[in-house]
Image (cartoon, rainbow, N blue to C red; front, top):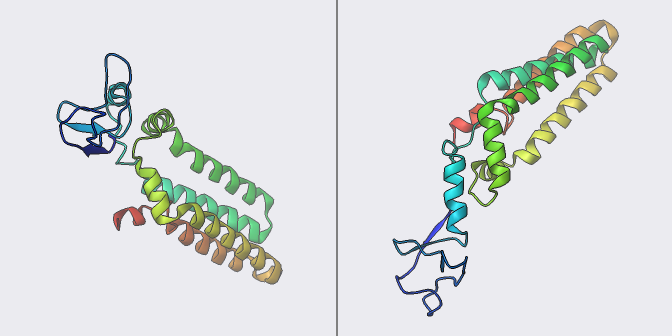
Length: 193
């Protein structure tokens, strides 16, 4: 659950390098029976996580699935088609589908429980933090959405009205592919890990 440090089996506070932390009379140090020391967290909190969330493994996240990714990509493509053709009904339907496709995966029970555990125990080594940092998804996802927006606006502005349907189809396909391959949204990145 948390990172363990191995120290010599000498009492705390005697120059052994073991942190001298006291949590009351019941737990004079955070040294375990094996001579290992938990990284500064009271044993009560360590046991509490395992007791409250036995099915949650902080090192294994719940990645987005292909159907969820495809739902987001299709709704974004519908929205792009509506934006390029300036059909506000199609644009609104695409936006509604996109909101539903983005919010629905977070309502899955296992993800809700995991999010609650992450909020209550932030010191655990959560896989989501490592993935976000390693893949820079916090930067790439907004950049991809911004590029898609600029492409749709340029196609709407520059393409004549008689070719707007073809331009809208091209925009929809480009948006679909870019969302399907976006880091943080696509399961393809998970397979290469």
